[in-house]
Image 1 (cartoon, one colour):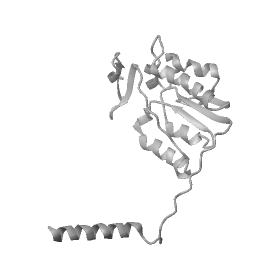
Image 2: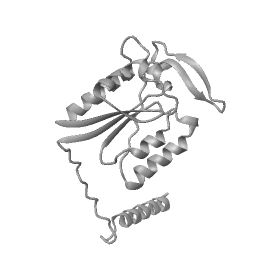
Image 3: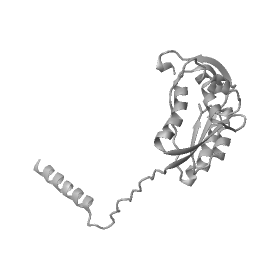
Length: 196
């Protein structure tokens, strides 16, 4: 027992001595640069106008999705004194939107395109702007690798930040592009958030 105690004490002293070091080879603490909030934001908001998004807007009252769309503009106004916002709708092609057209995104008629091709949208984003993409991530031909490659090429290789935020919302529409055959089926959530 005594012999075991000596070994434990010796081991503890050795670990403490090794951990403390002699001041050689110590790495200085990194300098932290605080982010500077600019008085004005340059923002581009891109809305997915494809049919797979239609079910999020197919309600007589606001769904979580419709509330989130309105919250984008509110968040910009609260965060920055001034924000220059450009709105776009993407799908078969990318088109600029007026603010009035952007507000129509909470209605089912806004969503009628067939092709998503997120990689094409990502390739046109301007890294010096705050870019907000609103999408369900249903990619044309389920080509998720094309999206990952586009994000890497446009942002990550340049050490730019990217954030992906997910949310739940009611849905009443068709789910598209399922499996190798591209099957589709109708789906409607219930009042239970677990069905979202």
